[in-house]
Length: 112
Length: 115
Image (cartoon, rainbow over all chains, first blue to last red; front, top):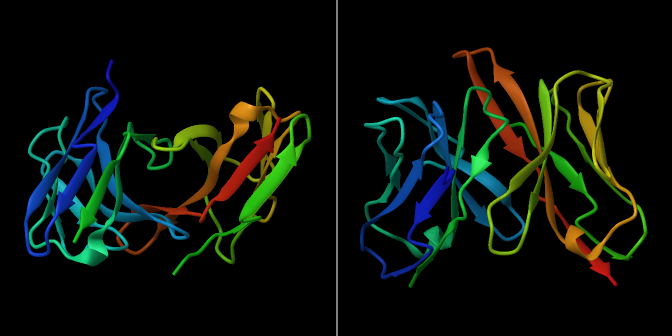
């Protein structure tokens, strides 16, 4: 059981570039979420999904897109990266209640 | 929007000392959770609390769900060097409009333990 996996672990982008952060879980969890973590800000919810084919916006969704075509995968897309998106991104999943989430190891993204 | 005030922001203690941190809010939460994050890793769930007044222990960790449902505390007894990390509280509440659930995180307490 690998739990929640994220790739890449580190990424540097130039302003305007696009990329996809990958997230996968092998626990058959319905709920998956993306958070960003900035110094002094704690964790802020970007987007979440309650099941395959269903996604919704979190607290800070602007500049990010998500899709959920399978239960296992929940990729996060940055269409045109901006320096304000420099952050550490965490993917999380849970069986049912949003609270009991299992987090991935994170992706550290720098946008120059 | 709903916010959690977590305190203290940071703590520097000696090995063997007890630690206490708390989260408060003006909103009522259905669930309180406490996570620990080690450097370079994702948060790991320590304790989940589901009922007002609930007191739950996990080894040297004890957490309580406040009676008013607006606060929670986490205690660590007899701290050891591996307790170092950032501790986050999180509150889950039910949004009646739309019928969804929302999880709100505190900003974290950074714990340093001197051997």
